Image (cartoon, rainbow, N blue to C red; front, side, top):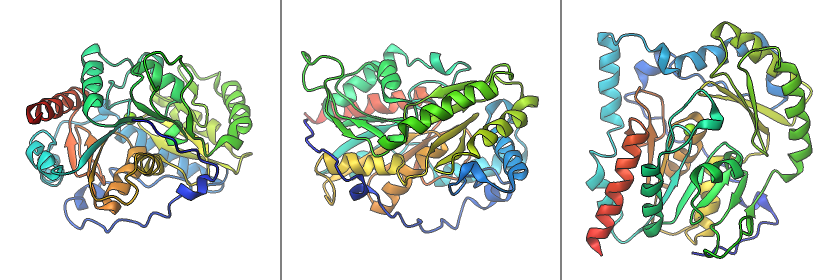
Length: 360
Ligand SMILES: [Mg+2]
């Protein structure tokens, strides 16, 4: 499929997304335990005042989302798990409901990369997907428009996935490109579909250099340039140093009110304050595919982290399709269903392909 949308006015796609209605059941115990904290700064130099408390909150939340810190399951935790799984059943168990819902509709597949198609590994440069997973994604793309939506820079995620027939949205959706038009197309020839944060490039470069300099004294700290955003990885840093590292990041960011900080799985992310996230990216892609206000589309988004919630929310607000959270543990989420780990994602993709082939 070829896309011909050129964005001259990205605000056209900037959506005022209303908050979804609170789901009154299921989350209460999780909320009580502050399993997931609302930590995102609302913009402005990575938080400004109240920095100490904010940093502690980031670090606590990173610990909570780290599988190595799961304590042995108590009875309450088991109950939480059971309650959560009732509200977010396995997408494998719900497979028939998903395919039934697609009757007369085009399924469109959106997937995050890290923690969804590849395991979370110590060195983010080595987050490779398996060949088996690549085959599954390639097969899915034969039948359904398929996009990878990642926080990474687009070139890097393309390099991991190495499938030219996909759409790629890098930098949390701020850098979107369509598939190569044909096998003869040279690399880099695809039309840029959307880069709403282009003006931030020089600032991102500057902050990247400052972060490298500032954090070089902390062993294991890794600053990753994701073109329109930056990730500071905590994965290889001794936990005793997490607070110091978070402080350093905040100090650098304090001079840049047009950038904001968000927190994910053992990572702090720096990005422009513009209202553009993975949710906007999937809206943009659906519109590009001709499904802006269409009823005959069933978008499925699979992701594992906080930034994927923006995409889950969009699907909820549209009342269309399904969000699938990849997680072994209960998390507050706007996704409808769950899968435990990348191997289950692969199995789900394989089943989709088998189902589609059985219809043809
Ligand atoms: Mg992820």
